[in-house]
Amino acid sequence: MKGIENTVKKGEIYTKEKYISAQVDFFKAHSTEQPKLLGMEFEHFLLDRETLRSYDYFEENGQMQMMKALAEKDWKIIIQEDDYILGLEKNGDTITLEPGGQVEISLRPLTSVVEIEKYYLEVIEEINNVLMPNQMLAGIGYHPVTRIEELSLLPKKRYAMMYDYFQDNGIFCHNMMKGTAATQVSIDYKDEEDFIKKFRVANYISPAMASLFDATPFFEGAPTIGKNMRARIWAETDVKRSKLIPGSLTTHFDFKSYAEYLLKLPPILLYTEGKLIYSKDEPLLSSLSKYPFYESELEHHQSMVFPDVRLKRFIEIRMPDSLPFPYSLAVGAMVKAVFYTPSLLEKYYQESLAYDDAWVESQNTNLQSFTNLSLMDTLESLKLNLLNDAQLVISEGERVYIKQLQEILGKYGSITDYLLHQYDQSVDLFAESIEIRRK
Image (cartoon, rainbow, N blue to C red; front, side):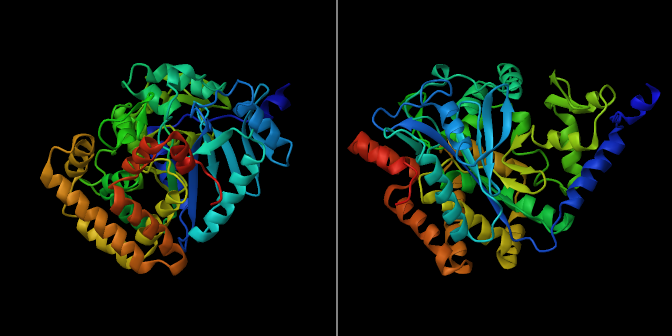
């Protein structure tokens, strides 16, 4: 028995200092000598084309059957709880399900947005091939018809714990979990200095990115009043772990700063020596002395915070809504232009030095009301500069994505207004506008 006991893997109790050091070492280990890859994630709703209602995971022809059908077509099951398939992988691309049944497509890291389009549409086509004729995947920031109370929470222990925790931490927490969909881009960093610059710039332009890629014309079955509804939802979702991380622009925010930020927050749930526990409101710092962790379990803590700009093995840019095709590809083109063109990155970094956290927070607040005209002018100028600068530096093949976005913004003002216009014309036209398919 003694020999068996010695082979059992043991976790470690971390002090604050050792924890910070471990996270800093992790971030340094995932730096990249030549940052150039883009990791794009596209979240979509499974809708009925005629009624626009969203499908429930458990219903006939819902996401449960969709995932089973894909698993029978060479997609490998990577997430399964009990008999419920919640995640699939094929050739480095993954399909996973969010708490309200949102379908998330995460592509293999690529260098070209043209390549991203190719592989994205290939995955879309595979999904569409197992759907019923009346079904479609939609690119939009919130369910167009269905209310979240009508949808089951997916059968995943992590989601159940989060849902319970969030009921007391913001009026829109459950809407965020079951009702929203996003487009996200991950970028690499060369070293800590490169991270500091990119992290600051990403937070500086975050209100502009939210506004440029606002595509949420409906909320709980009714047209939204005003714009940026998904940003408003996040502003009322456990704000201590959402939106802007305090100090992002006010301080010299480095790897250590990020590790300290993680320690201040309740991780909601923890993995300790392979066991999942519900830690609820307990800050991570308090948990360190109570629970032993494998070194690999520290990475989980990074995934339990949801700021607009998040650090994991890479930097995640999380502001844009889920978007109709092909406008979602403009997110990748914009991010590539700003963060992988040294002259543009330096330009926006120097601009950012004139601003602090309070400025970003005031812009985010103004996105909800548009009452401060001076802030609006500053934001519109930043948006225009981003659009124009991106076109100057990216390839001709990728420039088309920015031009398509500019055309729709020039005609309608926002993608949200464009979608409302299509809906006013007819439900069929609206459905055609948000359906994700090769066009």
